[in-house]
Image (cartoon, rainbow, N blue to C red; front, side, top):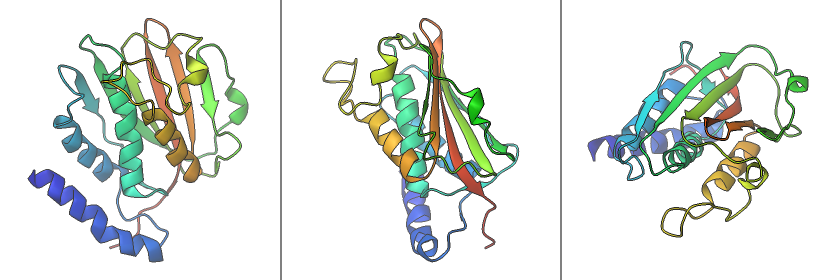
Length: 201
């Protein structure tokens, strides 16, 4: 409980500062560490495993810290719930110091790149991937996964809102989302978010 209280205080204390200063004040590594504490007690964890790798080069993101945590948390929970069998979810990222080569992304039966038109494709960018080794997403399902209320889970296990909320938060931040999934071999959801050097204390 103490960790949750400390996390809440951290974001409440920075909210007013963020309204007056667009420079991020919380680094991605702090955000990921807070997410780690939340996941340890999340009911969706069950017998699944998860691992969060900190960034080698810390940076801030131009998105509210609570929105960032909600988006990544929803992706991880989606990974936890992709199979009733115990499996693993990994989070890893890096800082990109050049704009994305958008020509390298093509929608296929196994991939989708979302919000290419709305991406603020100016370096630096944060690239953050959430990968699971679950059953993967069937090609006929992949185009529907961000639709409101769409779910393949039973009524007690999913509302169909998690991925839709992620998409809304990413779009609002000027980011993009790349999905890669091979049926039978797992999925990777990669966030691309505008980043910036951290504001000095």
